[in-house]
Length: 361
Image (tube, rainbow, N blue to C red):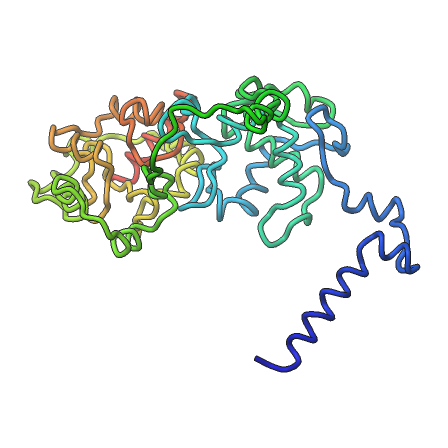
């Protein structure tokens, strides 16, 4: 260790101590912060709207701003990329074993969304966006959670009118008054305590542990059934060759106008799926030739067990099945890896399917 290091540590500690308000005032160091200096850092926004800046932003503008500044981590439609946070989805999952907590399913106050985006985002370039841009991004996140419509414009004037789905899902934390005293009283009684404490879950439940590290670090034996399941997922089962799309589909006439609309809607899918020449698997598989194909037809993509079970049963992506799936993916396959909540508009679904038909031709 360098002989200068202890001195450096002592000097740093002393400087930090002298910079504390009490010492600074006593020694005549520094000065009180000016109101404008405090205002530059005081960006907090309360649930009642206190602190909201004047401004507005639309869902339409928010989609473009979000795509340019946020999608690289959170996905084009707030569905999350890899282990970056999902901002949309999770509706009705809070009572599940593994709930998905997003802005739409969990956050009780819209002010938290605006405050956090304004204060800390985008990653690496915090506080570089205008107040109007933050309003637009917040509006787009609301739209991604089906809380507002696509023509909605969020502003400081209608901010408090937005109703968050989980606004009533929280209670006041009064444990300091109602519970803590129970455990500090001299005569506190402890009964039925466990003799030992043991780990019952690991981080893999939260999808934060890379699979390779988990396999290498696992020290305890794994049940034979578990090993068999893992092997079945990693090693594609020998299955009959996937049939090409029916000739009737390839020869079908395409509604070019509808397909063009579908290409626009497909922007909601591009974060995970690719189509056309040179398409590659991303978070989701390529969708070339999906209409009319057997489910799970892309051989080099690892599908969910739901999909593989359906494949064994001969499930095919008919127009009817694809329509139902695009409407509510998890209603059809609860364990699907696709986090996207689905398309609300029947017209949008029809347009996307027509677009997928066009890529099959």
